[in-house]
Amino acid sequence: MTELAARRRTPLARLLDEPVAKSRVTALDAFELAKRKWMTGERIDIGKLAEELGVGRATLFRWVGSREQLYGEVISAAFAASIQWARRVSKGRGAALLTDVTRNLLTALSGSEPLRMFVRQDPEFALRIVMSSSSPVEQRCVGAVRALIETEVAQGQLQPAMDTNSLAYVIVRIAESFLYRDVISGDDPDIRTATKAIGLLFAAQAAPKRPRKR
Image (cartoon, rainbow, N blue to C red; front, side):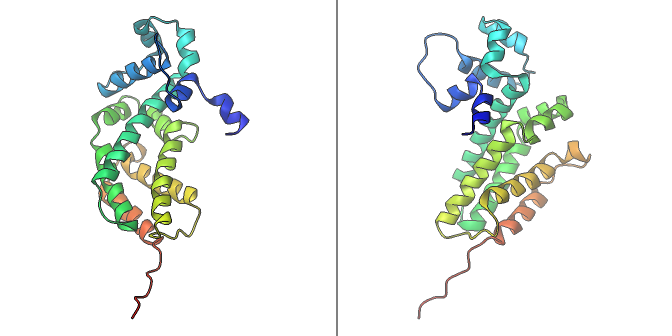
């Protein structure tokens, strides 16, 4: 981790990476409360969170960073749960598996009422959280997709024509453009086309089939 990245990590981010036993209110309590509010469609307000937790606003800001950073952590956690589920229910190997994961994941995200409510409430703010390179959401999405790709590469199923991080970034950008199309262009989200486009990209990275031994 670079020195700059280390400085940017909030106490909440450190606790999420390295959970520890606690006997009092911590940043994790703020995170769990924010998650519950997110699930019910309630806007996350730092002042109200601090009041409910019984801590000062300054303390809460020190724990979680800005409101944007807290939203980023909450949505990142929701995405992580969705991609884990999508991987469990998907079938196949290589490009076929990753395409199935894409379909299941985008279907789940498109049907996520908390996510849709968040986007409807404040589209500009929402897109800044879910698509900005400065937010943890896109960074972790790219990391999760890269991990899936690298697993298939290690198993000899894929032979990417570009580095896996760049490939994952391109895939995430395609997925975002179709998933949030209603906000970006005014058209309805199109999971089928997104899955087809990403599937073609995965298929292009498939490892050459080995000739059968006679």
